[in-house]
Length: 100
Length: 351
Image (cartoon, rainbow over all chains, first blue to last red; front, top):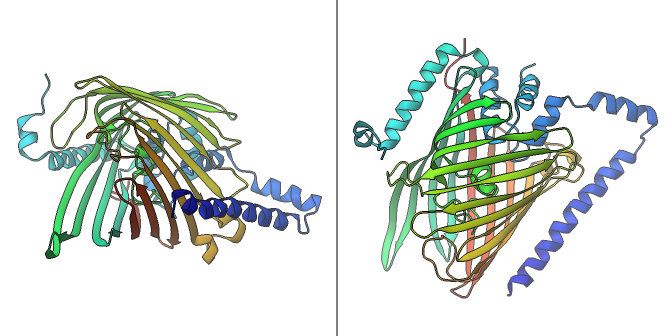
């Protein structure tokens, strides 16, 4: 079997999966979504700077750990500052999120 | 020319490095706040690899230690310990055993300013994205590195100095950079090539889009230039991650594209579907001229990897994958199944 014959079904699968997931997300979001609900949710789910930066920078490469000791939160963030090229401000925001 | 102290060489580089890190960590414990307690992190893995009908069993432990020293310094190092049980082949029955242990990197980071970190020691060569971000066994989706892995990074580590950091960081975009110089070293624990180079990346957080370029100039015997480019896209509303890299060396070039899916946000993290992560990677290499040292296949090669990772509770993950590699030198099927545990804990209880 040629390379492209092997690749074709995989490409098809990789295209369809995110579309299906996106459609599912959209349909669940549209169910019973009043303006009041939306406002409440947006307020409740508004991410802090630290949480947003954690998701954008740390989550780019790996899943967050299930938990860790507060004694090492500073070490983790300093390690990430070097590894992910974070600025000092990013480091402080993420540390505040991990250790408020 | 600077050489390693004789007592360090005699005592085995890896052991000496471990002693140095422990000494630094002990010192760090006395002068840093509680949340800066030194940590041990990393992964442990058991993997089976069936290639061309032969099955190998590989156990790996990859620990990392990070120890802050005061407000501006961080010592970090990573090692790998591997046991490979492989079929002897060539008419012989039974299994052979290969033991491998090595220091992957050991570096001292000085946080010189908000946008600059100075690194000295042995560090992961900043070229592309895979070497610095995906080589920890608990992060990578596939056990095998991409075919173009060696372009730009060689053995993966450099010995010398590096400047790196975030040049600009705004809510709309950020630019990060890394520039290094590496001396040639033939020490078994600190092996590196004489080279210099760097990487620059732009990240747009609202689009979750990152693109960048890399450069490496090798100056050992004949000057050679490796260049690379990468593109990562991880949209917020679609549970897909798209990662890709291209690299070109003096004798070969190639690319890889990897996608993976997590349905955590749409179905929940604790459901069966939420724990499953299908991953696909396709890659091609092109041989321009023969070279026995660049680490790429000797002929044009195409490969597709398909895998299914399953995230269990307590930081355990099961990885399965099937790869089909096509080349004029022969086609190969590769089956891999592994179980990976990620650990992360303080070296001791903080004050």
